[in-house]
Amino acid sequence: MTPTLPPATAAPLRVLHAARRPALVLVAHGSRDPAALAEIRRLLALLRAARPELDVRLAHLGLNAPLLPEVLDGLSGPAVLVPLLLSRGYHVKVDIPAALSAAPQVSGVIAAPLGPDPLLTEALHGRLAEAGWGGAAGRGDAVVLAASGSRDRDAAADTEAQARLLAARLGVPVLPGYVAAGGPSVAEAVARLGAEGHRRVAVAGYFTAPGDFARLGAAAGDWLTAAPLGAHRAMVRLVLDRYTASVSRLVPRAA
Image (cartoon, rainbow, N blue to C red):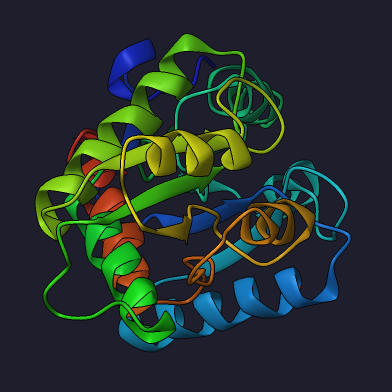
């Protein structure tokens, strides 16, 4: 069966048995860094505590177990796959739908990625505050939104949209900078803002968990650097929002 995709790549809706509450499958990227897995598991624990009636499971696209196909093999019936990803891109458009299509026993839908969203703005602001960002930013302050980067135009557009949301919240310029793909790099973005007269440039880590990309982004900063989003309370709310919105797109039918 063809899975339901996020609105940008919509496909025919799956059908949900009315008597069954869909499982929530949190789909993480995966990382070789043990700190990343520990942080994702903290987020998983918070999700389960917030919604104890739900079957909440963690799956990875690579590098960590369990992998998404394995998790789907252990499910039957309705499920919502929530990508722990911050923008549209190959994983959201291709990898996750392919895994769901290969699990015909699962009546699943794929939620939209987490970004852009005002709740991410709340989490980013919170992490900046933890790093020392004051309540009233100076006229010479600015922020680089350090992101992984992607060759996908939709992914870049999503990151730019999140930068605008954060700029509106902070009242200072926010420029995306990328670690792996696209431009400018984080260091280039910091330098550009400095050349424009911003004396203090903070780096906000637009990453779901610690890891090499987060460290590379932080290393390019010359003032304060904020931790990745991780298990921030706003992330819990956002994942559950994506789940709820996706459940509402399912079409009930009698068992």
